[in-house]
Image 1: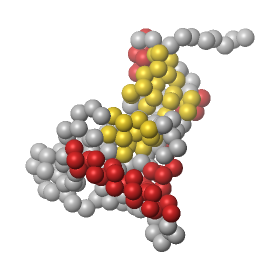
Image 2: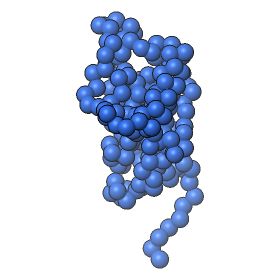
Image 3: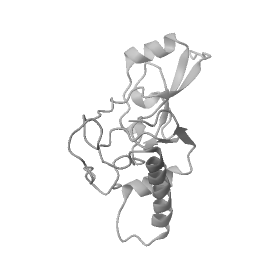
Image 4: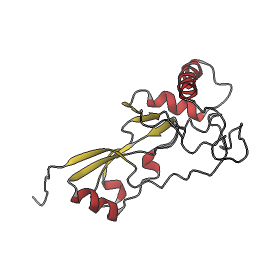
Length: 179
């Protein structure tokens, strides 16, 4: 009583409710600027800024009433939201496009792990080619496998997140790989 069921679509490729990814101008050989070799990410994370498996979309998710209304008007009731930034993009969330509080519209907080052939906002000078993107992803997979089997003499939050996300569905965006 007082509940309703509506048939609707699910949009599986959105960044609904997440902040816009800021891509700094220049750097890394694209558009001029100083070449960046070392990571500028602070903390115990991967040396390549394009590897971000520790990102969790639900941690930054905020309901957006205006956008939710547009989704509902188009027939969508739920969306898969993720941050399209980097080769390893972290985990996505499934949320409804309702008007309730943030915590009541979450259907699944860690729905899938996302990967791409686009390094996103990283301004490091490597990788710059499709072969380099593949090499970085493959090497990160091998590093995470090695890291999970070793006594921990150092901390790598990226490799730990990569390993934890391997049990989730894997979504690969093979769209444009040119930055």
